[in-house]
Image 1: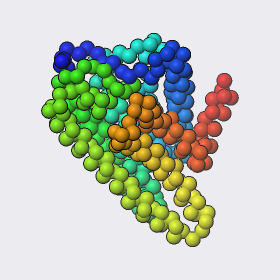
Image 2: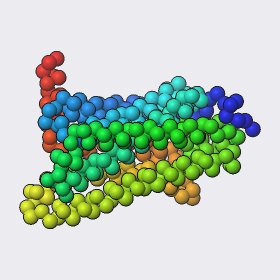
Image 3: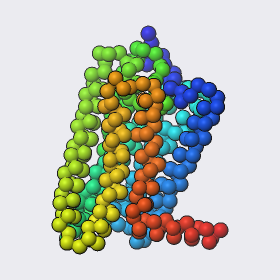
Image 4: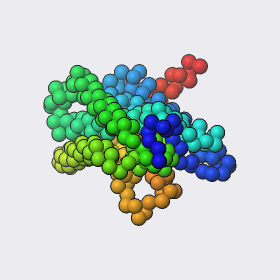
Length: 310
């Protein structure tokens, strides 16, 4: 038996036990992190430098790219380090920081996806009020609210998690520090407060999910009433990338946390956690850029200008 005050480090779950597979995982994580850094960095640079992209939709997309970069940089570098040096250790403070920043960026991402849904709803269902409802000040306030609520949510959950006494060792069943796996190490009776906060967060996320579903029902109802096929295509081209990102984020996260124990296994847990924590931040830029001509043009202009300068 041990308590949290006597724990100086945690043991993360190794991705592989043979040296060849560890190096393979290191190369895989390196390729993914470089792809995510490049793709999200291009979007941030294109939106920041392209005057034609200074609109609410691209402003929120820039914030989404920042949250994607943050979530990748929170989990992947430590996994790469452990695979390269054949270790499992992460310090107590390092684990707490990883939990906080992962929750912070994931919460911010979901809040931003909800705000982006509102942007699509106003632009299609209330176009005459778009300038009023989504002015520059309103957009700044909404983005600030998303980041502030994410910070508060992450701070409360992290502080409560690491104030619990740990009674079952320090080995985590995950390749990064995550609250459900830390709760498994804590004393059973002391988890009620943490579970209460998790339920509260789940209700908030569920409220955002209901808002997204309701908004898209209204959006598709209006789009299908547009008489011209060209108008419908233009409306769908702005909505489908956002809808795809929302579906990817929600489906992978929901399956990771709500999958039945009967289908749970070590390899399954690792695969699912990898999919919901690493894949969406990497694919989001690709999904948005594939169907958005303005963004593709801005990214291409940015690349060609940089190339000609060198």
